[in-house]
Length: 155
Image (cartoon, rainbow, N blue to C red; front, side, top):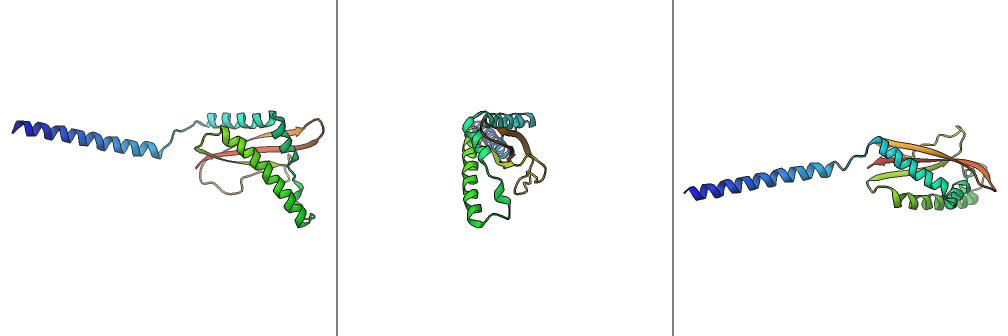
């Protein structure tokens, strides 16, 4: 009789450990590793700095055409400019994806440096969004300053 009670207590303890472990795994998986605000801004600064120091990416930012927003351009020209701009954004996104932690979503915007147009996210995000920007102003041949803005958030 005593041996059966001993096995029963061992089984109860084992089941208790399994339940506690399961609860911990569920709670931890729902809350991925948190980065501090300072770490996020540091990551954004590193990404923006590398883009500004890389001649190819820097030139792509300078080549980004902001005149497609004008209503004076015809639709065919607007379409061609938009295709080229999308290629530039995709090239920059490929680079960012290669160094950005996979649990962070991001969006990049290239804007004029004046305050005539707000450089903001396209869609509202119902979470904390971290933003940083850098000015890319010229190369040896071109002076067409642009503001490169990086938004990051956890999905």
